[in-house]
Image (cartoon, rainbow, N blue to C red; front, side, top):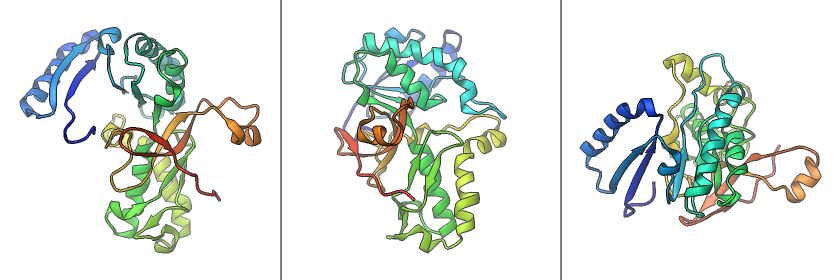
Length: 274
């Protein structure tokens, strides 16, 4: 996640009543004897857990259950991210990077940043690469190729059932995906709906929400090893795009394509959309 030579001090935050179970997780981490895992600490206090941290992976939230949309969680989880944003502002390093996974993650990223005054907005990200990976996997399966042969997949919109998986600019073995997969009905139907509602399908199958965090941070800024860009929800200031297309709409967190050089990330020049 942070390179082959970076040692990690892992600070785990959990509810007080769940700390005994978390100790079991710590024991398993110790048993794995990971050479880069230098220390593990646990706490039920966000102020202690976030002390001087470099990265915050905010995955703790009430999970989505069958029949629920991510927006249904806002009233419950909004307060969680308010408290965590305040703790980050007070105790994390100003250079801390924050990835929000708890749903609705785009809105929760905005909530956390709105109360976090000491970390710049550009350091806050909402999970969208999971949707990008889901789209790549489905295209690879349909084409009968390895997933690393699929590139330039983009996800537009929120991490929700309203997202738009963009296959028009995707390539498979260097060729446009629409040439390799000529079934346009599948691309515009089962493919798009399958990506949009993949989380609901997983909940129905296993009774629990997706455990997709592992794919969110394959390197320091989440650029996949096999693709030059990653989809991330970032806080949106507007500029000319907002003045032209959405002058009166509050857009707290939009998905953009990002590219990482290992120490920083920036927006990729966006493709022309259809």
